[in-house]
Amino acid sequence: MNYLFRNSRIKLPQGLLFWREVGEGMPIIFLHGAWNDSSQWLKVMELLSQDAHCLAPDLLGFGESDRPNIHYSIDLQVDCLAKFLEALKLDNVHLVGHSLGGWIAVSYALKYPEQISSLVLLAPEGVEVEKLEENWKKIQNLMKRPAWVFKILRFLRPLIKKLGLNSWLEEDWEKRQLMLQYPTGSKLLFLRQLPEIRAELVEDKLDFLTVPVLILQGEKDSPDAVAKSDIYARVIPKAELKIIARVGKNLLETSAGVVAMDIKDFVTRVIN
Image 1 (cartoon, rainbow, N blue to C red):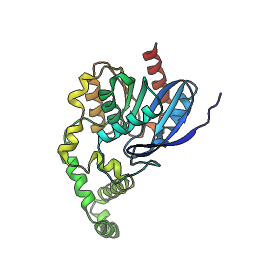
Image 2 (cartoon, rainbow, N blue to C red):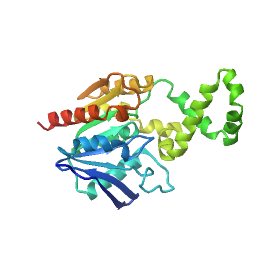
Image 3 (tube, rainbow, N blue to C red):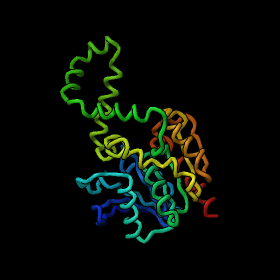
Image 4 (cartoon, one colour):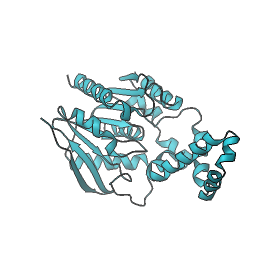
């Protein structure tokens, strides 16, 4: 049986939340990353829809959900998710999170452990690795740089290329454009005060997680991403780490079938 995707909206205290859903059966909630919205899960959800009721919200401040002019935090996203699941009368759910969504999923499981049956984390954020402060400062400076600076640098691209700096310019330009496209993700990961970000990191709480956890990590992802997944796998009591060979940061784009199968196998083992 082929299931059709359904798009819905609900008014929560934090704002209007949009979500996609498909399938029937055990509820699996998918939380997207900082530079995406719920559409990044469509292929995985389609593949799992024969066995599960898949729901993927646009987090508050992303996609088609409201973008209220408020101070965004991980705690705010957790509270919003709690209201969402309460409104839909969903409990004993399996939470799947990518990147920022992984951080939110873990934070939710720590706050509401009785509501979570298992966690699947894809290259999750939320723990501190080497150069966190250095990277935070770089992003802060990048976003404070006036737009006209980039325009001049791009005008001088032929000269910059001769000096061997072209890749640096393009990387900064693309990173800035991405962060402007996803302002809420930028705020949550980089554009808050560093002490506030550190206060919401979960590394020192991971040993309190009581649910089974599967961590999926692309082999060729950035060293920081691999290091974060290693921390999660090392500290969480019931964690499994699976490295997906020859895959970088675009895990969902290139390996949706593998991800879907890993989620299905893991959740089935948890249930049985």
